[in-house]
Image (tube, rainbow, N blue to C red; front, side, top):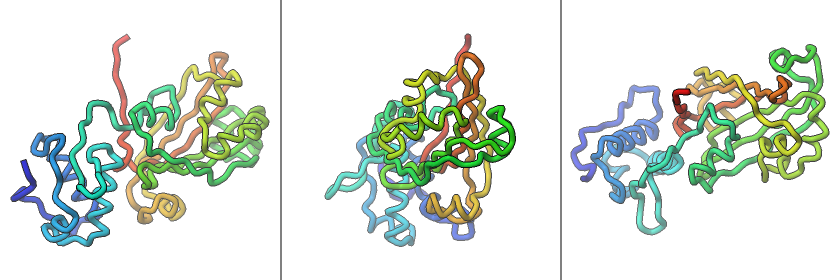
Length: 255
């Protein structure tokens, strides 16, 4: 099956970016079985001509599809529909951190940049969530995650003061080479439970600049507070997620 005469056209009046309109359309065709695993997509030039788009827009579309795991680009040959046998998203209720979740889904193109790591006065809402007095100092770890070179998630982990020495000694974590979840587990901070909330928000100027999106673009904000078996709350996590690149997933099971 090809994309010839698919009846789709770019809505020039929509607030949805052109690249996202096209990537959503291609993924919908894949989900509907109109494009099958192994099918070759049209060339960048064909996309540009067919939908009257710039080459930069088409490349961003293909990068988005590749980051979602639905398309594989092969140098010199083009873009092909991938086989999606495993989940591609971020398992929001899982006990693992983002890095472990991504690697568990077979992603090897995850990169982490630590943008800030230092002792700081924690925001009041973080102190309340962690059971600390307002104005308490703790450790803040800010990181930017990219998938396939595309900025996909910006996050900040806030830790209570008793964990500051652990974080300051975690060189691999502070350099973006290791998992914070694994480091904390090694020190006896093993997840027993967590409360996580997801809210759709408009990207602020700061968040938009970090994720290379426009100010006011819709984005998902995730907040999570984690505790040990003894009830000690040891981690407050806040993340801004480009759900066009990282779909959030939830499994449901009957106990």
